[in-house]
Image 1 (cartoon, rainbow, N blue to C red):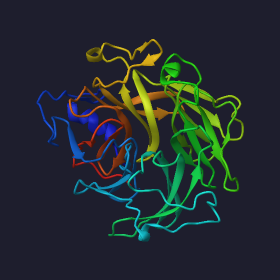
Image 2 (image 1 turned 60 degrees about the horizontal axis):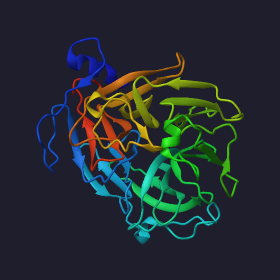
Image 3 (image 1 turned 120 degrees about the horizontal axis):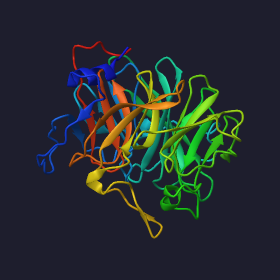
Amino acid sequence: MLRLLAYLVLLLGVAAPFAAKANVQDQSDNCVADSVLAYVCGAERPEDLLALADTQWLITSGFAKGAGLKLVDTRTRALRQWYTGSPGQQAYDRVAFPDCQVPPDATLFNARGLSLRFLKSGLYRLLVVNHGGREAVEAFDVSVAAGQEPSLRWRGCMPMPAGQVANSVAQFSDGTVLVTVLTRPGTTIGDFMLGQNTGAVWQRGPDDRAFALLAGTELPGNNGIEVDPDQRRFYVVAFGWHAVVVFDRKDTARPLARIEAPDFMPDNIHWTGGRLLLAGMRLDEPSCGGLRKVINGQADAMLCHRGWVVGELDLANRRIATFAYGQPQPHFNGLSAAGIVGQDLWLGSYQADRIAVLRARRDLPESK
């Protein structure tokens, strides 16, 4: 079992959370590592990322026109475009996805939230939020064989309701799909930064033919979403509250808990390496003038580089513990996702052109 937090403590030689040093050198446009983080460039705004369990492979989304999906070999740190739209990557399932007969156009594919579900040995269902050419959740099969690169086949898509733009996606083992909407029509980022409810969670069951809103899930900026292994609960990031809200799957009228993050703005939330991790930018960043501001209804775009934080949700104690953090870096901003592969912590960003890697000690045992 990976003990990444222990590594972070040992790295400093003190019993304290890990603190990365700021990089003061100008890296220009290259991909040179700084004092703490290494980088894999060419990722094109890797807003979300997922580690493919028990392999060296990492899947990242690309939150830009044509950025689509990337596959990363974490051992060689090589990245390539994964979905190309080739005939070999298409296996349309018209029974399961009757609404969507045309695969995503690779030149438009704008991928955001990701979710992986185990189907059977060597086979996973990958769901991807797509803004390119249509607002939909794309469904792929991912096949994994020992010693080989995983393969990808498009199976169909689930269109979003008119006017609703999905942000993140999660799935239960029975095939029920949950998506978050950050801002419904008529609302803005500034609204949820001021604490107003702007979004919600939408659900589509395995026998449904459309998404339906889950009453009671309306929050200020519904962002990342994840399901619990017990299949009874799910977790939603309320970006405007800087908190995780826990819901009972069978009754969403009232949340089970609201757990606030310590001084950071969680974005995506995923199980990885046996931990439930959240990632986001520092809330009160002195070098950016402190808190994010809303002026005349417009929220600051946060282009000023903020410190980054990865938190771990401790549901039993209803708190978010600091797992890793660092000071602002000149060539990495907009932290939005985190995943563990082996002994390294991989960091995604909705702004950057690269994935960051927190280099780990090699004398620790690898995670299983």
